[in-house]
Length: 95
Image (cartoon, rainbow, N blue to C red; front, side, top):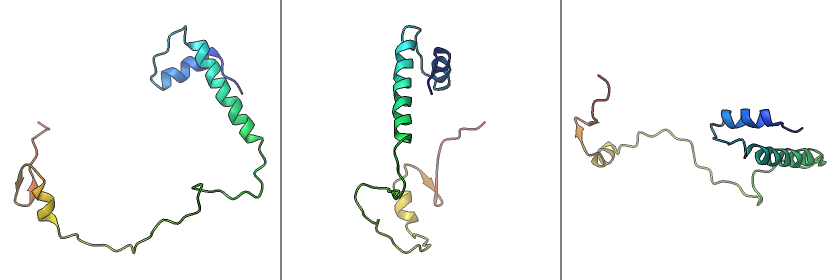
């Protein structure tokens, strides 16, 4: 698969990237090189290879999934610049 100049312009527009006409051919070459590399990866035989999430075998530490109230509302509100009756005070943003 390869992209033409029209596809490069479309990709740049969709990505909201400003690309000049002089840069378009170079960008086309770069995208085509990436696509060639991906095509080469698709040819690799991965039959019997298990998927992995890390290069080192490890397990993340797990904790019990327990619902707690936290009971630290006072500490949280202490970080706010303005509070009233246990709530944050913020400037009005809607008329």
